[in-house]
Length: 355
Length: 138
View 1 (cartoon, one colour):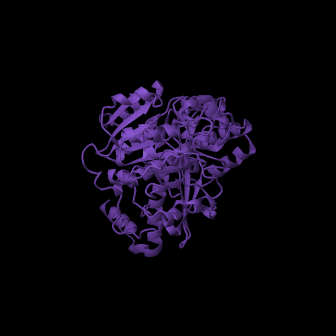
View 2 (tube, chains in turn yellow, red; view 1 turned 135 degrees about the vertical axis):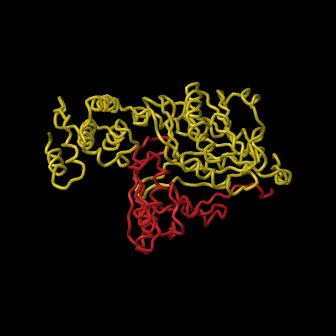
View 3 (spheres, helix red, strand yellow; view 1 turned 120 degrees about the vertical axis):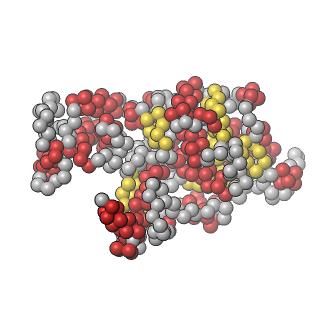
């Protein structure tokens, strides 16, 4: 055992240390080959953290903590019962950790290794190559919820608000909105069959399948929009692919090798799908409806200019929010609220003369 | 041309530099876009204590341990630990109970709210009263 591990061992075995005495009182405890001496959760985390670090795997400690916690039935290491931190693991558990860790060594994202992840308090199945929901997108959902709460006329009546999600992936955005807006209904679309299946599976796991319509369609195709089951939407929400095409090759191996590039690549300026969604507004959005988008930090200005070039859409970029980020970290993305004014405003709006 | 519908882009936003300890930048938006309300701290979780001292977001500093570099679609970060500090009392709470950042932030606020109430109210805090009553029932 490495020196660090030995010191930890001594620390844990000292007098009065809760858990360790209980651990060693197990009469059924056997010496564990071949990871002899490395048999408790804390030691395994330490061991695999070291292995990951040596191999240059990012988030070495977080990865090993999530894997070990998962095998022990907890979502995070901190939420594990402290008694379990120092109890010896069974050989099956050790084997399971070894298998999951070997996938991490192949740069598989933790969420795919565990086959699940959490979003806004919901536990969702994760399956490659369906896009893994990002933490920043939780804030997009929070913003939508605040807006809905402020528009009291939309809340409370059955079937309201009616929400369209473009590019639903695992169903994270749709399902978190449905679960927190008990009267809402959602139409979720995606061009990938795998995403449709996964959203369907997650909807059923959460018993939300009665209020969501999941439709396999490519929203960039003209014909797609003729067969929607419901009328104009109160809200359109999306975390569309917004990576600039030239940035795609710089993405980490976790993303490049495992996640669907179509969920990320937004074209030359990352705007292709964004502009498609905004162009849907006249057809799909109610008066006083809103479109909420997650975008790259370079997009608010680009979206603003683009909207000015398309007065026929009657859309205003009314608000932007930076995602919350710590002090040292560059902001990851921005969230946009693009609003469609009511009919009165539309009638008063004077189209510029073409000269 | 009518000004209805013209976009008002809050350009000063792009020049705001992040404050130390991660003060929430979107709060500055409230000055520019009155439509966005600063939401009061909400109680998450099962237990609801009556009338705990409420926390003012302006007195909190949150260090969101997300790692370095860009995020959003371009990265896949799993370090969702939240570190929350109540400036006036100096109490710090670290929460990594869930895999959801959003939930960790809510839980951190709930735990911090309880600790801050105990800090100022001591034995009179509903937190301690509940514990005493629970102990009596045993």
